[in-house]
Length: 492
Image (cartoon, rainbow, N blue to C red; front, side, top):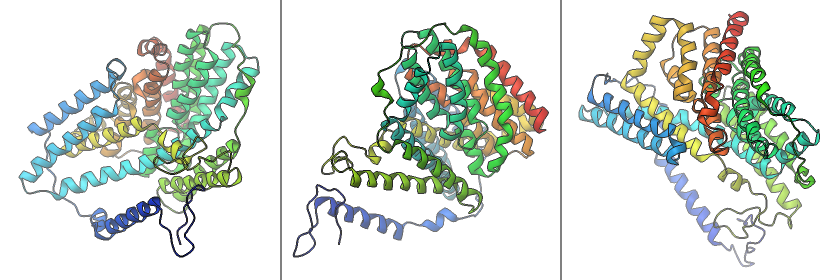
């Protein structure tokens, strides 16, 4: 017998099973899923056959694909001016590029290569998507429970001045980023900074630069800290513990520019917020613990069971959902609207896991889809192999990997790292660590070089801008060079 989970729903009829509209909808969806599983050609996904590919680098399709990608990326860079979400041009570009490729291949009777390639890239994106979605859901749940508001109150209640606050938030960004990823960390601490420095725009501008640098540096030495490190780990290039060899170089990358920016921070002490903001709602600290447990689950699944990390993260999402169920059962009156799924009965304002999922950075997630599919398409055309042959063959691994960091400041580190992984050059562990470091910290050179910088330009609109970040580029570049030198000294 099926019982509706919503407490406000009708009970089963005493003479039989009473199917509510939600039950019938559930049964219909379940039947559709089973039908798809039965008839979908799953075996095609596991096919390991090698397919013939065409070199389209000097074909009109190749040139048009480059043009489409270039136009889409210009629109991404101009997101702030055009007020056009960055995912929109990238989604369109991905579809257009692969449609052009498929058209050429279909004209020559080659349908299997494009299908196999696009399925492979989509699978890689799917793993990244669900991994980030779980992490964003946990962070959103912690925000809803007031965990970070309490952090804000705690910081200000210590009566720290602006310069001390500058260092504390930077250090927090550096150490939270390896767990919560640099994008999420930057958004959280920027919210704290904007509240603390409401009367000091100069403090907000410089502190945002510091948070971007610190979050990117902290994310470079952890598989969870950055999209680029996550891709490297999920690809199996480096083992989990190997990333921590980048800890000291990452510290240097953060501390050097922060020490220079320190002298531009205004004097004075922030105003203490209302005491009510210090209260953490019931279950907030438990959710923090469940998030750490989820990360541990992901590590165990990957390191010891040899499963993709995303499987551990999705298992961890069940922890949050079950705990949410506990909250509803234990505090039925307070959380009467727990199951506030659109269209469900009894929707309200209580804690709801599905509403936290809805608050994820969907624009960023779809932007990553567009980037991965676009770069995958350019690689399938043949451009990435040509670039790999040139820079890694002519320049050597060290120069090429340092250049990757500089390029990532202009093109964003995610497509750059995905391109390197697609090229898959034959490099030592130290060189893979170097490119992981440079791709992560090199994105700090410009505000558009990392997801953290792009997100903060939107959050602190008009205060933290491209040019406010640009004037600190020499200091950041000095830290970038010092971190590379430190890595070469320690890890080579």
